[in-house]
Length: 502
Image (cartoon, rainbow, N blue to C red):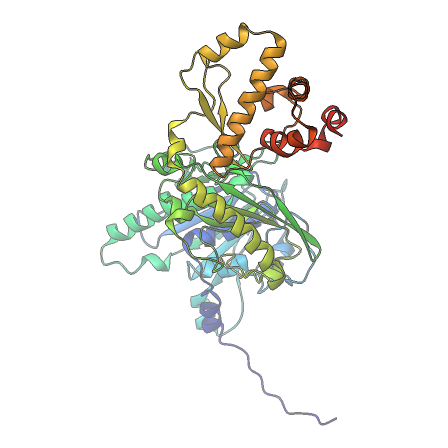
């Protein structure tokens, strides 16, 4: 075999670093990437602090996670620190082993990481500095001295005390320092720089983190608290399932690679269109509209990777603004989604596109139906006793149903004067009536479960009424064909009814 001559092609360190940094990061996505490392390291608290009273602006991100030894820090500061093909724990939010470096260099030209193993006293420190790379021409990091480490720790503590609500309870094990935020340098006036960074951190970044990490902030155990300049970031859940007006559609599951992909559509109530005009509502964060939030929500190991928009599958449109499709994937198949380094873009694999599109078609139909269902706004969720409303609305995975209010005074009074047989027959007629109304509205009724309180009628009452219809000359076939479907009953689902009619 012929032996070829070779020539060294070592990259220019400065040029390569600046190219690597151009991965589509914004300030909020860069901070989120650093926080992925904190969460993977079992941190329960993450602190972001900024110092903008003088230049260069400085940002500190600290966590109380497991921390790193000197050797581990050196390994994690290398480009890359691991292979994307490596098998990972289910809670590992990393992939390429580049996030710490690329995210940091997307915002600064020099960053330092101090770390110590949890339970130990002394920090190790390493710095990547583009100026040093340019001057030396070598691919090398700076090892921080004990004096430099002590100065960084003191500065971090002083900045925390400069902001309100400082806390002495927080003991960081890893601290990332961005010295100089070059994307905020292109302002002639220093105050404009300060205002721009303050706006970006206080509003845009806080809001983004509140959505992306909401599942971690909402946990009962192993909860993660994120604070920015000593202000706690409150989680924003785009699927507030404790709100009875939110309607969950039937979930789908698809086996894909070594994982299961879970897909479920959710439809917001028509009333949310009006409610989102208020500053604080359960449907949208402060700076976003319903149309901003419509679309796909792709979670990877509980971390929201992508939200808002349909990722090119369909177009955004006002009549779909009430539709949100939740997708859960594990971190064992993320390479098949071609997740980029910044975790801001994803390609849906061809094998899954049909499943996604089927779910979207169903969600589109339900979201549009809800969008045009203005009349339902006048109905309450669950009327109180002595309510003057004969109907109320309830959200189900079939749609928003109208149901007869058993607490309506006249109806309640009438029922109290009837015999059990007459009451059963009245309930039978009322159930058929409300189901037929929903059928006319093109909403499928939920099947009878056998729970009288939930269904509004008991199986015993249905059996008594069917017996009466038979006594009045109606045939079994007529009852099966015309009556049972309008009650939401499958004949073989309930033994008593099946025995009566078969």
